[in-house]
Structure formats: C-alpha cells, structure tokens
Length: 374
Image 1: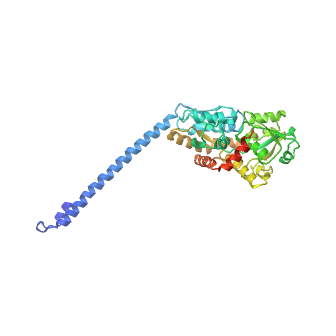
Image 2 (image 1 turned 180 degrees about the vertical axis):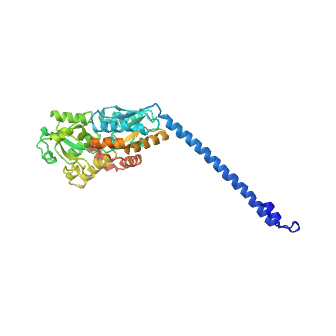
Image 3 (image 1 turned 45 degrees about the vertical axis):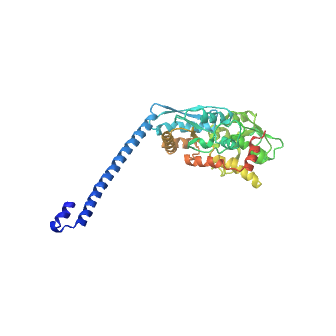
C-alpha cells in the first residue's frame, strides 16, 4: 500500500500526510492480522483443552460400577423406580458402566439420605433415590436429619410420590366417608415421623381430623401392605405407581381398595376417588394440605448425588438421566408396566427444594406440631 501511494505521486511533490496515513493503515492492518491470528490460536488451544477434558470425563466411567441407593425395602415404589431407571441409565453414560441398586433401609429413608450426604464419596459413582418427604422435616429442624437438602446436587426425577390411601377389604373401610365416620380409630401404617408416608397419615389425623391410629416403624410401604393383608392394619398411603404394579391382582379383585388420593389433580386411573384437599374445610386446613402434600409432592422422588461431586460428572449424569427419560426401551417398559412417567429436571428440583425453606416461623411451628408431636 505504501509503494502504491509513492508511485501515484511525483518525488518532488510528495504528500507526506497521505504517506503517513497509508503507513498507519498498513501497520494497523498488520496488527489486525496478528490479533486475529492470536485469537484463532487461543481458540484452537481452548478447544483442544476442552476436548481433552471431555475425553477424560467420558473415559472416567469405563469399567466402573454406579450404585443407585434406595432407602426402602424391595417391592415398594422407590425400589421399583430405582430399578427401572438403573436398567436403562448405564447405556446413556459414556463408557456404559454397570448400574446396580442397593437397598439401605431404615428410618423411612433417613439412614440412606444421611449416608448419602455425609458418608458417601462424591465421585459420581453413587446416586441416591432419596425420600423427598424428609426434606420438610429437615427444614423444620428435626434432630437426626443430618443432611442439608439445598446442598444435594439433583440429577432429576422420573415421577412423583402420588400417594394413595389403600385399605384392605377386610378392614371394612371401603371409602373415605366410611373412614371419616368410623366410630373407632382406623389403624394405618407409617415408617418414621417426617417421611412422606407418615406426613400423609398425620394430615389425615391432625389436620383433617379423621379418626386415625398411626402405627409407625415399618421398613417400607410394601411392609405396610403386607400388614394390611393380615389385618394387622387397615392400610396406608403407598405410591400409586408402586401399588398398582405390586398389588394389581388384589386391586382388580377388590381385596384392596383405593379410598383417597394425596395429589393436587386426580390421577387418570382414579377419576372417582376423592382427593385429600376435598375434605379441607378451612383456609388453614387447605394451606397445610398444600404445603405438606401438594408442594412436597413436586420434590418427593429425586435422584441426587452428594455435595462436592465434580461438575463434569454431574453434567454427564444429568444428561444421561434426561436421555433415559426419552429412551425407547425405557418408555416401552413403562408402558408395559402401566406406570406414570412425570419427569422433573435437575433445575426444577433444585428450585422446588430451595422454595421449601421459605416458610415463616409461625407456619414452621405449626407444621412441626402437626408432623412431629408425639
């Protein structure tokens, strides 16, 4: 550019201002080329580093075993869904690790949840299918709840608790109205104060005033239903998905009866079974049903990993979980089992759990009295 400018002028009559401008443009051009070249080099290096990191992350799960822990005994709703997800999750994780389910029973899932939070290595190899019903108890400051739900890293959820009170025919309680008007307290099963099952029991007894005798201490809802079979209990509130699979023949034969559903909207298979909130008469009753039953149902069935799990492994597991929810074989199995798929993203779970802590002190005190008073 500088030579071209000189050639256009006579040597005796040079326009030095123009020459300086042309020279400046030339230098700026060289600087721009150098700057752009540097940007390209940096971008290539960054992409190479990212690719290397992605490759290392993907390679981590090669030849590994991933555990999915469940806080309840085999045969219940949590166990059912944990095993269903586990059968399909491994093929969505790079490296296709083996995925196994381990039952860590006791205290209505509290032992497993505490263990996942404070005693499980945060290496991305252990996922807990935890009882979200315990979250409200921790928010209310219950002793022994040695976990902080806001610090768990949520992977996703495949469905919700959607509890339904199921009674054995021999109990004589064949409808919610018969329960409400029973001349003697109706015996229903629980696991431990503060979990979702016992919370449903407490709402019926202490919020809605149904004549109820709660017998707690069972390892899972499968055990509650066994006790109902023998007449030891009238029944209890298992997850609808779990009971409609495990007790299909008894339900079809009328030996077990769904009398009340603990959901905001009726389940499609139970259009004529009343909802818990239908029996709430005062605004306070409605408020407590919404907090204890409806809101808690949104985070009732999360899959989570311990705090401190590396971000790259969290992202791998979250993507694998989302991909599992769309997997054709997974969907075919759900359809065959006639289960209800109602997935919740990690972000939605995280937001719901954070919102659970936003209760005023007066409401917390009343909830504590309802759910934990002996």
